[in-house]
Length: 167
Image 1 (cartoon, one colour):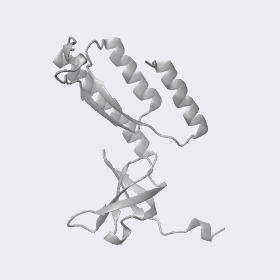
Image 2 (image 1 turned 90 degrees about the horizontal axis):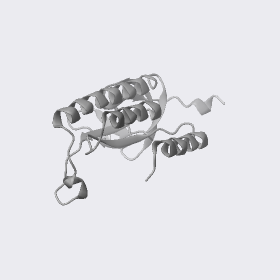
Image 3 (image 1 turned 30 degrees about the vertical axis):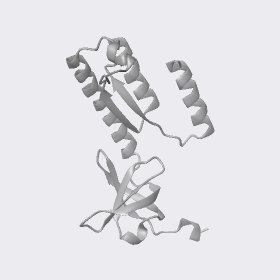
């Protein structure tokens, strides 16, 4: 029972308390009754918050739920909206990741990638990160210099340079 204005006020307060905060969210596109205006409001929210990761799906009625009894949005309209939404989402994610190139991030390593000398981890924003490494890194947190990215993963190298040693 919240509205967008209240949501944006909360986001603003959170970012004021911690400017490095980033947000991810799930979006249902084509929920019964969604108008073009509703959809555009969702797109504007996506742009304003700049969700670094988002997961979006066309509404799918579940039998026995109240929403299953509602009049659905035309499937072609829903599909078109989803494609537009995901394109905008991807642009936001790419712009965010571009800013990480040549930046250092903290990564907690989770597992070795099969049949390779690569190891997988996540940064504090749950972004997937892959670097050259061995199983010895699993469970450890290391600084990684981001060198590249694709739509789902950041790629880098472990930064062994200890900047505190200079101080």
